[in-house]
Length: 79
Image (tube, rainbow, N blue to C red; front, side, top):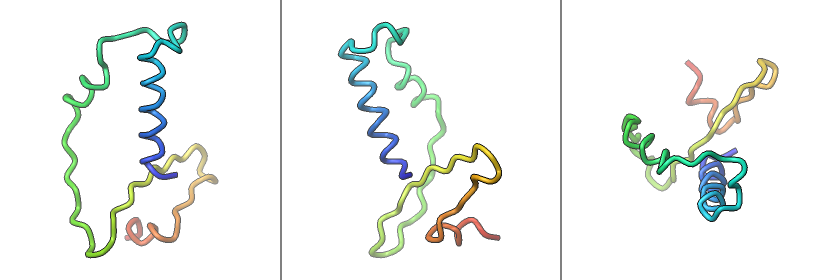
């Protein structure tokens, strides 16, 4: 799946938490996401190829047999 989808889901959940819909499921800190953002390192972006928008992809491997690299990104990961 695309990273952007995860970000949208996380943001939507945070809005629901702030609105009080999940009070019984969360312990509230002031703003842990901002604290984490300040502590994390800044990632350098690779220059985009002319005419192409970079795509962010999340890859999760639960079991070795689940590992699959889509063809459009496999070239980036091969040695």
